[in-house]
Structures are given as C-alpha cells and as structure tokens.
Length: 179
Image (cartoon, rainbow, N blue to C red):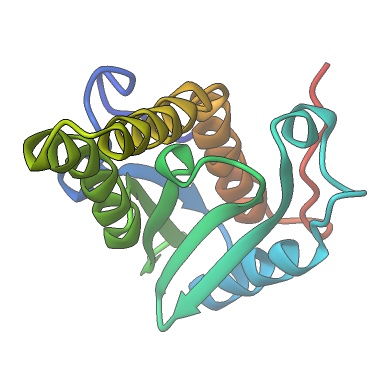
C-alpha cells in the first residue's frame, strides 16, 4: 500500500530528519528519482493546478544527488515561507522507501536575521530623519514578507503529494487539480 506515514503534530512541530515522513513504493529507487526529475521538468505554469497558480507558483525545482533529493516551488512567493522538502529514496525488499522532511535553507535564515537586525541597528545608531525612514522601510519589508505566508500549509501538502504521485507505479506522474 502507498500510504504516507505522517508524524504526530505535523502542524505544531517542524518535520525534520528525526521525524521524517515515510512513503513506501513498489518502484525501485532509480525509477522513483527519475519520475521525480521528469515531473519537475514537466510542471510549468500552464500545467500547474489552479490552487498553486493562485499562490504565485510557476514550477517545481528538483535537485537530485545520488539517492538524495530536494524539491521546492518556484514563483513569486516569500522565500521565508517556501518550504524545501528534502530526503532520500532507499531500497527495500518490496521496492523503495521515500523519506522526507522540511527545512529552511541557510540563505533564507540569513535573510530573515538581516531583516530583523536592520531596524534595531538603525534605532541604535541615532534618531535622525534618515534613520526613521530606514527603520520604517526595513520594518515594512519584514512585515510584507511575513504577511505573505498564506498558503505555506498548502505548499507543504502539495510537495508531499508530489512524492506520493511519483511513488505510484503506472503511467507517468501527474499532479491533480483540486476542487
């Protein structure tokens, strides 16, 4: 059976390597990875489901190295709320096991740290009009990035659906439209 095994409290705690999601597949690891690579190349703005296009998604980026993979959505979305799904595809007696977890990339964490530090650095440096304008601009950028988190749950769910689809034997994988 191709049933994803979800950890408890997926919404309240990050899904990391310690609490990875497992998906069983009857396919061999090489075939799963090839199907994932193919789906990433085929998914473009015109073939994406409406719910993803409405969130500003324009495609899927797939990186594969050995038995490890990384997938994330492309488009006009906040880098702070664009989850990267990473994991491995390992061989089992019955085919393969896909392990998946989510993480922020170092680049996004550094961006967030800088955006948080800039307003405080401006306040400490003095109280001129330029400082207050800079403080307002940095705060506005940070607020805009935080407010664009809409759909973060949908983005994660749809990345897991990508993995579920490529794990299934049969015709080439297709990401279904949701009603």
